[in-house]
Amino acid sequence: MVAPMKTTDNYKAKYRLWAENVRVIPEGTPVRLPHFHSRRFSSHAEMNAWKQSVLRQLAESAPAHE
Image (tube, rainbow, N blue to C red; front, side, top):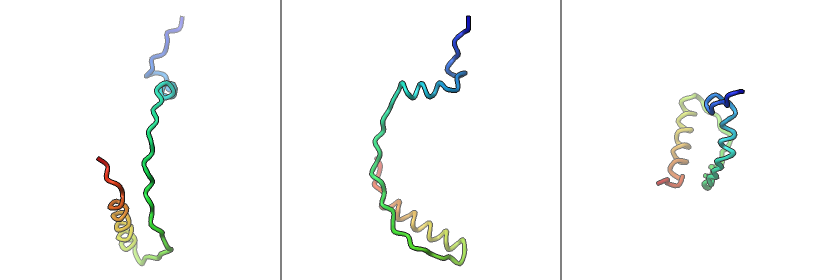
């Protein structure tokens, strides 16, 4: 007689658990990205400064999560 495997020993158990416990999470509204044009930067520092400003704008325009 073969002893049943424990869930921790079964590498495929997570798929069975996911299938048994289906949980649907609604997606939020997508964030509108600004239109990007082709740019050339004279240095990595200049590119990183531009990228930081774009990320800051995106963070400010994103809806607040409570």
